[in-house]
Image 1 (cartoon, rainbow, N blue to C red):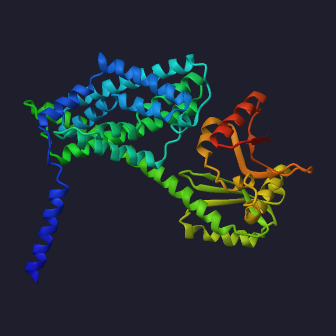
Image 2: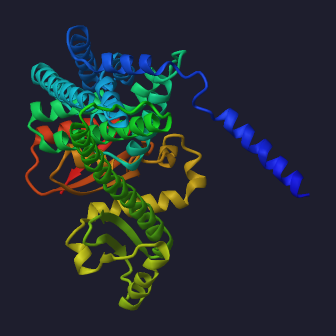
Image 3: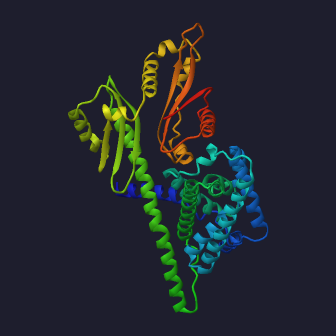
Length: 444
């Protein structure tokens, strides 16, 4: 029995070792290092290719064309210096690290300068959804950069090159954030610039880390020096660089993941705990902070007694919402935050949602069933002064014999003044983004 178990485990071990062996079809180590080192340089053709790719990506973001952006990412040579830094860290090649960092810095500055020039000259100044998507990094960007980097360095160490590298270039998306940063400079929007650089930094760091891990896993030859004192000095520098790179990235990944978990738990908490027949949540705001999170709710309808709200607060821990403050505004506090138009829209939405049978008769009213996409991050990036907003699919009924009309109603509250021109521009953007035939915008 014991021998049979050992034989079974040996078969399993052989199966996995053969199937998942990264040393199969591995290219010559010197050829891999030479290839990565060559792609690290940004002179001549590589530099011009980068500039052309930046112009293409900027145009794609400007006209909101996904296909054009993908084309630019396929052309971009930005992966070279990042993988060079990761290889240098994995092989104790301090000169390659310096070379990769220098060329990456040059490429980054040239990319931002090129995209800033384009967006300064172009007559199209509106921020489209493809551009706005690069201003607010999420936890998925961390995973994409890390696993994309792993796929890239594994493909780069093979004898037979495949279509993995172009796929990695598309997935990790190094080019669009740099173009978005250029747009932020050209438009004077610091939020766009910082958000885009943040996303670019995430991609760069995690691609470098994944390259370092695979190089160490494949046991590339570590560089040694005749001068042992110099070798120790280089080793200390490399350890310092690895520590400075990895520790903040771990914290960064943790914060992004923790924020996503908090927001998902908060949505589940609101959906399940605020099910009242005569009370409705019309607005919700999540505030994530290291000092403590906050859920801010605005209610209309029957005013919930304090004991009910206290009972709901006790359930926060059941949704893993520890160190989270629940703020509920209703009654007089709610009246200060909403107007009759918003109340009317909420009531209409609730009525038509319950009366789905009658809505099926009229195809135009069936548009109420179309879900509204989550554009919270895009609006926050596009309009920093936006405090809160509400979006509803509603039906307008006329008193004459004309049929009812469906429209999307958006109510927005800004901290400062909002000009008529900005109102028109925002309405057109909402109409395009929400794919709505008609949008009614109400500025409070």
